[in-house]
Image 1 (spheres, rainbow, N blue to C red):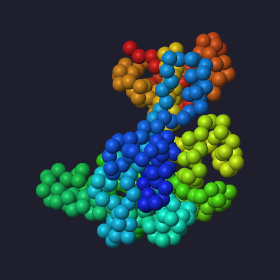
Image 2: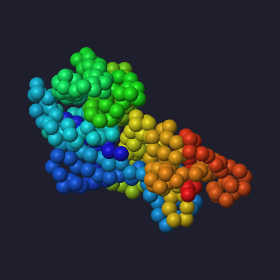
Image 3: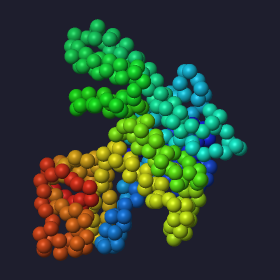
Length: 361
């Protein structure tokens, strides 16, 4: 999974990236000038507990790749703030995180000369809509030409109808995430990756003085930006960057002093998983304990394919026990003796926290 971190200059975007990735220097992990990249382990207390129980040779967390995009330039340009390089890369992201500046610092002026969370969020939403509208208009022109040339026009006409629906939505200044996509048209979203359809985490980069009122600020913004594909989180980049460099005991003390709950990485990952409809299952044993990320609703056979394509093709059965049930005995042998482990077929819908052992030919 790839998550893109975006925002206006001086929003604290790179500080957030450094906090999440634990990269505390000025160098890009990828060596690129347009974006810093870092692969981060997904924390999971359940995997930690399973590792303690099984004491395997290695523990393998699921991972997320964070991509820190360069700050937008020409923010007041009528031609849009996204260059071609940004559009190509951002459209490949599974989700975007918009860092919104909510702190005053006279030494680093805001690009719009004042702090206004609602304005900055809406500005970027408008830019998403404009970028998608430009793409849709170009696509419509091509489809109309294709229909005139082709003898078999059914597929092109179906896409044309969908693009016209997108155009109407965007011209009403609404993001495409507000549209319900059925299975017949979801392929267009997958192929074209419109920015305004992407799940969006809005991370409010607030000062430490705003910790106590952060929930009130978030509730106010949620009334304005309502969507099942948007989550709004508080982030205190300056504090949390410092905390990320402390050992665990010191970190807990300082978090209590500041009134912070949970790590910023955990909060962001949990939001991304909810927005993308993701969950985890586990495989365990003496050699390895591992967390795997899948989409909710995936079957046992599809989940087996995430481990290895042979497991999908040669799937027979899955031995299944949920993590919470396993904790009752903390032993697979005892769980088997008590009949707590089930045999499930390929159509079984895997649940969050399931421990799977795939039987295959």
